[in-house]
Image (cartoon, rainbow, N blue to C red; front, top):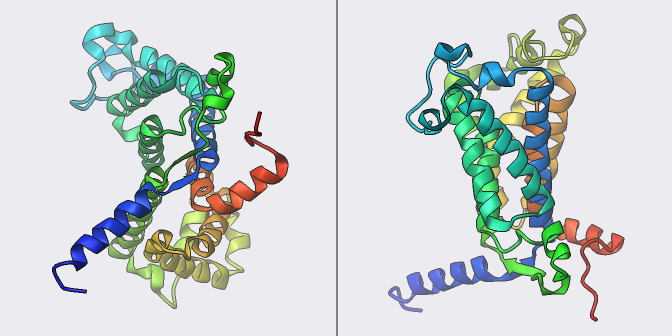
Length: 303
């Protein structure tokens, strides 16, 4: 092969990988799971009575000192703009989860959800931005009508495609790589003690933090080796996240799932771990497809 032909061969292989057909049910399940995480989180804010305070400017009696330049609903709705954006977000994301309304509803869901972040920037967490990105990819993907109520109401179940190009799955995997790599490098830059072999383990301080940790500090102090090894494992896992783009992604995902389950057991971070775990429906798509086939979920039988 000549040197001049190599770039073209690589490009063709990359395009073929992105466009190869894959079962779209795992991606549809990701839509349902990601939307469910956001809906539960928004409902929880409403049940705690925080909506009028979090999503209203300080000048109007809320907690947000100022909105960033992306906040555009204020001039349209005045002091009620925040609660309006909250209501539209909750309604549109619920419809998107159910698969009703198609791309127009999906785009409204993403835009309204983003407006909440522009209004209350300190409360716009990394997981909010990650799930918004996932929902935006969903809005552009061919799997939006799969495992959805909308096509059923139109009596067009058999017309919904059962496969899609692989590029949406690759985008989600790339998003995970960016998140884990940035988290791992930030940890080491800000606190090199993550890799220390002596002193108080960083992970111990995190899981016993009174603001977010749920582990009793006295009990946890008896197991310093557990927190030290857990910290090493976290750094190694995050820095090795490019394996998500290889054939070994399934093995890597098992370790990441265990890490997030550990976060659920030792910290109270809202929907963070559940939102991240929802993306592994795509990473583990071959296994997910086998389970769906076994249970007969979404299987389109010949008429």
